[in-house]
Length: 362
Ligand SMILES: Cc1cc2ncn([C@H]3O[C@H](COP(=O)(O)O)[C@@H](O)[C@H]3O)c2cc1C
Ligand SMILES: O=C(O)c1cccnc1
Image 1 (cartoon, rainbow, N blue to C red):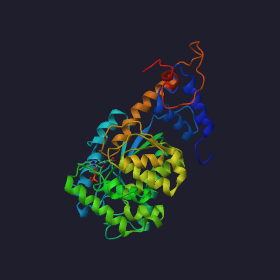
Image 2: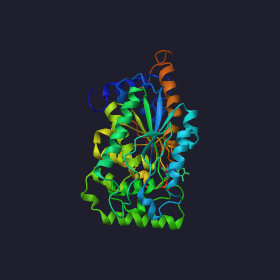
Image 3: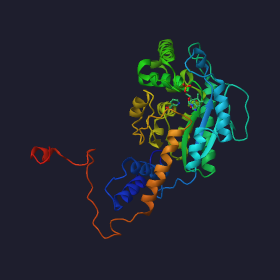
Image 4: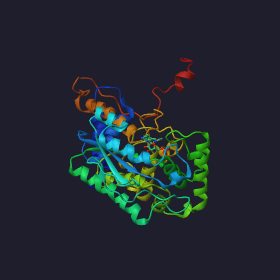
């Protein structure tokens, strides 16, 4: 199979949508996502029966600069809750029949739980104001773990994956990465994360502004930027996105942190882009420029800022509903009425220009 999207399978899915007895493109972006999944898997009989959210858990050395309102220990505590099935991501995933796969990709302390995948690439990262966050080996180990995990998921029959993370300080690493990749300022990319006050926000901005002065980011390779400013969770998720492209499994992008990892993956390997599914637009300020850069149109604009993959799993029941229509509805032919003609989508429901000039609507 070619390394990109299977255009023929996507075209067959689009044709199926247009044949269904309902307003043309009526399910909007949901139709596009189902069509995209057909292109990714090379099969217009789209199925998302077995699905999981991979939650990459890791600590960030930059936390020692006071960029968060809780300490690093919270990473391990919440990661264990995710493994134990009691965190936000578990509650939401249970509702939608999604398996949760928490991964220790870089928690700073020794930790074990039967449900926590042990793939530690390092015991947390270093403070990027003082030195690069990861060594070359560490960043590669984390990316590789993400790719391997997707291969395993494929072997276990998973048809759809979502990305999530848990790591105190990872909105700082995400904003830094996005600022470096897109040439944006700290002011444009820094938000309150898990709930910083004004003073914390100002400190977080200063930290990122200083990092952007410290490293010659415009001359660094995408992988080098990820190694220097990123986190093990971001590198692991970047690997998951690459694995999605490699093993042809659709992967849902979550909020700011997941989107930063997706951007890293696409910068390192541009062929990843068509395999990404957008879910929601995080309320963090850097989310919009990243989505734009990636050419993704999130379906949900819910002002979410939770992480763990919660926004990504919200998309799954919506896809289930859309798929029910895709698979089960009658076609125009089956109910004996003529199908619509194809039209150019102007983004508007009605072309009002002519009517307005004729004075018919005001
Ligand atoms: C109790 C708790 C549970 C969380 N679950 C997700 N996050 C979210 O907040 C963190 C990022 O925000 P910041 O960069 O400000 O640390 C990540 O762990 C993210 O998943 C949490 C944060 C906390 C405090
Ligand atoms: O958008 C996100 O991913 C996010 C924002 C704030 C806190 N945790 C996650």
